[in-house]
Image (tube, rainbow, N blue to C red):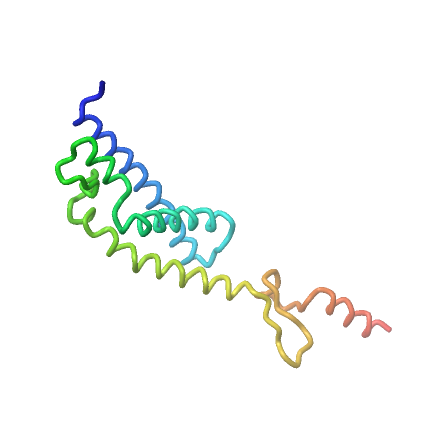
Length: 150
């Protein structure tokens, strides 16, 4: 049978690995947002972050592994003393709230930029594939070229 001390260490190790995985997703979502990229991979990473946030909030803003650590005899019952500096582990929620807001803002901005924009009076539409070029909507370009050829 595994000793209680080893079980608490295992819970902390699993929590630390989960934390690093979730933080990698946070860093990826932030970096992609700053780079102006919102794609399927960002959506998957954002779903991981949102899922973790919902589990944390749904558990009364208490890590679900805390109960497991208490069951195995952790002194405080908290897994915030994972293998990170104590001050950092205690302040993770306060650190992450501004990051979550920033991630949401960046990707909302990116999605707004990717949406087709109708330009009034010019009879053309700027789409993501030609947003930075000078060509107009492909079908309208074709129609315009046929008018000038006849």
